[in-house]
Amino acid sequence: MTIALFSIGTELTRGEIVDTNSAWLAATLTEEGFEVVSINSVPDHPDAIVATLKRLASEHEAVIATGGLGPTSDDITAECVARAIEAPLVVDESALLSIRRRVEARGRTVTPHHEKQARVPAGAELCPNADGTAPGFSVKLGRATLYFMPGVPREMKRMFREQVLPRLRPNAPNDTFVIRLRTFGLPESTAAQLLEGLENEFEGISLGYRVHFPELDVKVQARGVSQADARERATLVATIVRDKLGDVVYGEADETLSSITGRALRARGWRLAVAESCTGGLISHLLTASPGASDFLIGAAVVYANSAKTRLLGVSEDTLRGHGAVSAEVAAEMAQGARRLCEVDVGLSVTGIAGPAGGTSTKPVGLVYWAVAHPGGTIVRERVFHGDRNEVQVHAAHAALDLLRRAASGMSEGAEIPLSQRPPVR
Image (tube, rainbow, N blue to C red):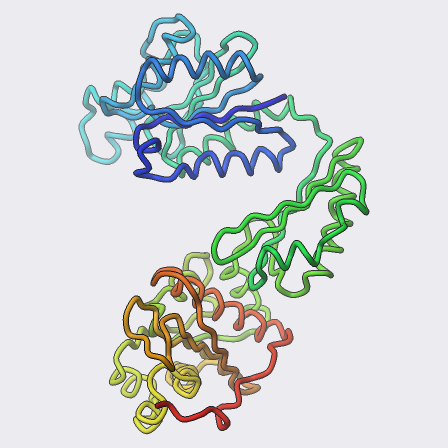
């Protein structure tokens, strides 16, 4: 079975938003063993939508479309589908009832705009929307089955998992298996060099690399005589990949660096306090995005000004005068101060120059120091990150979490910066 993806919306073709739906669907379908061979986007133009639907249906066995099912005037997908399959639009009473219940439960009045979303092509099979008002649906066009889902990513993902994927799975070849390894700290080119030759060494194995800043996913896809055979092949090669890449591999599938770091802190029984300057609370946000952060995160502070670093964390004014706020010495005292202030096992700190201004010849934009103070001592790291302000902040936050993960897991942390040997700041 070949699958085409179809994103509908003028905001996509104008570049006003990025089509993350197609990327997510393609990756998910590939991991399920399907072959996605075409990704298409068109604006909210009826003729273009109808023509694309007919073309894709003639070339593929399944078409998965997103967008254009909402209440506004430019949401015209349902009427275009009806035109393509030569069927009238009808009001689905079950969909209308679901819309009424959801809207009224929020204390709002149902309007014709809401009711518009219950109009689907006659004969369509409904896909209920558990997170929104617009239902999805599927229809037949020639030899192809066409599935239509909302463009809102949260609604689309749940509908795909619960409604569309179960309908597709009986047609899956069931001869592939994918293991996606999550890594941080290794460039794509270096990873590819370390893994060179594996695809030739093992039959039916292909490796894929996906950069999603600042991380890299390495995908091990295996094809075998059955899914069990493919799973065995993928598991074997994934083990080899882990050995070759080392501890830059922090997890699998949808695990995040912050969730794995939290897991390591729980396992160690460590309680954490965070002090952030240039990252502005991003580390705390990443940690609390996963449920259960209260198990280990006791407190966090954004200490932008030097006065806050001194008053809240006890950073020495002499250290600030002698080395500057962006220095290994201040990062160390920030981490130690956070640990002392919250009476916890470990303190994590970050200080740096996120830009775009503020850099000097000796302290360029992108220079960041981060530190972990724990029962065994204080570890400090330094790096100049490249990119815009957001990229520097994101990279710095991930680097700090990775150091914390390593410390909590008892991994090698590398050599500390010898604070006493650093040249004075000019």
